[in-house]
Image 1 (cartoon, rainbow, N blue to C red):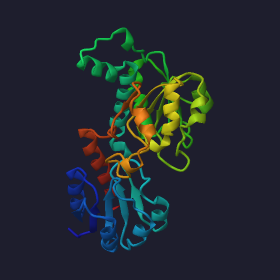
Image 2: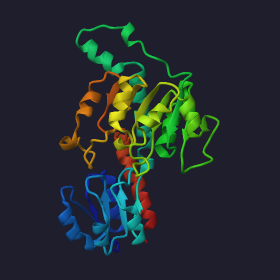
Image 3: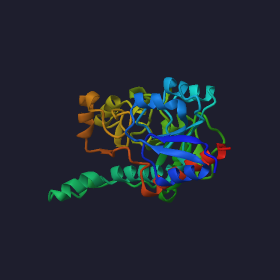
Image 4: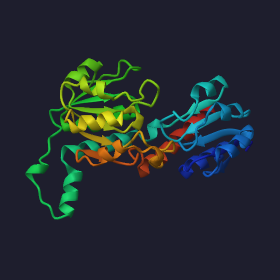
Length: 316
């Protein structure tokens, strides 16, 4: 088969993606330790690159990709890729949010149930021989109103996962219209501020959404809320959230993402980790997980399959 060019994998991915691209005629190269300087040197020879989040694919790198036809993101967020510049150069940017939508939706429900039933607190106590029943009395989701901000793949998956709980579901998406169903009400922010008990974030990180959830935003809610964030950490101002948790304006928070994550999402950036994080981490009404909402055994393969299909669609 005619070779379609070289595709460099900058991060780990399911072997299925490698195999599928090879079957399309690409020569796949796997170099997860490559640094920016070496990548810049190699860019002129590449037809495609496969990334997660480890390196920022900026204008300088893209400009040097004289043969580059596509950048494939194994996952959903494209904030580490200069998409606007890439498209101006005729480079197609592809992602695969369909691949982990179910995983994120289920994880968000898990965070919510953990908070509603004090599961993490109770587990820690029982392991220490502490048996508190009344203190760990939870609340039911039935009859509550959930507000979903961003109704794309993960937002709609979260709504689907909530179907069996007897909840009212409101959803707001600034850039989508006409998505309401008999189970999900397409709403404005005023309705969400006035009525929701639970707020779940499903938006990308952009200049517009940076610190979207801050003191002013939280103050607009009529009820005390539970916050779930499986989107991006910097969508939430951690200092303002910690304050709201302490004064009970926010009853609990389930955070799979933190604004102090390293660019790669593989670790916390300890060089910039402020004292407010330590304050947040000590609160009993907070559940934290290490950016794994979309990381299931099933989603790893699905992400690869979706991305392979999209690359196949643009391959001559």
